[in-house]
Structures are given as C-alpha cells and as structure tokens.
Image (cartoon, rainbow, N blue to C red; front, top):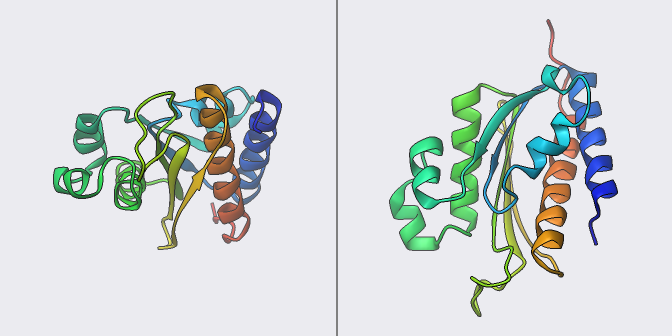
Length: 170
C-alpha cells in the first residue's frame, strides 16, 4: 500500500531521472487531484523539470483544457484507456514538455460499478519523441490509499520512461 513516504520516494526518483537528462514533464491528473504535482513541488529544484499540468477532475475540464473529445467520454467513460490517452496527448501538446502523464480513475468510496470498480485507475504516458504507454491497475484501500497508490504508480512509470530517453542537448 502506498504511503506518503513511498509517494515522496517516487517523486524523488522521477525528478532525479528528469533532471539527469534535462527533461520536462506535464501532468494531467483527475482522481489524484494534483498529488503528483504536489509531490514534485515539495522537492527543491523541481521547477527545472516540472512544466505544470491540469487537475482535470470534471469531464468538462478534460474536454476544454486537455482536448479530450466528448464522444470519447460518452463512448468509453471518463475512466478508460481512451480518455487517459487523450489526456496525456493533450497535456503533451499544450505544454511542449518531453513527457506527459495522465491519471483517471475511481478513488471511491462510491462511483464504482461492476465493470469499473472503486480502485480502478487508467494511466497514460506520452513522450515528445512518440512513445505511448497506457495501462490499468486496480488498487485496494480507501480513497486516500487509492489516490496515493495511483500517484506513485504514475510517477514510477514516468521515471522509467525518462531513464530510457536520451539526454536533451542544451
């Protein structure tokens, strides 16, 4: 189970990987409500790598800020591979960052269904050089635990991507 310490550790690892390669990141967060950005900004010097992002909690925000198509939300739901993919693509396009991450899920305690239970979270990562990853996980625990676990997983995924990217030339 994710803890404040494990979220901080994931943030430090992500920031380290970004700074080592001179890369930047943008975040598109829904169910985590900005936990990734908050964890990164707790670390001095994070402004060298964190472009910023959006807490796109409502569907309207996903559409207006990140360019998610209303039809995608209607067809697949806000918690879906398609919406996570579009959130990451929108964050990458708006920011010009090297990496974008997106998180959309059901933190609970309500809002789940048989097909999309509480704890289900979709992630997407995009890179400026065209790499794209989407994956889904289901986390146990209450709302705080699901949110922390999702933020930690998103940062670990972004750090893995960053470690495999070539350094930027200044």
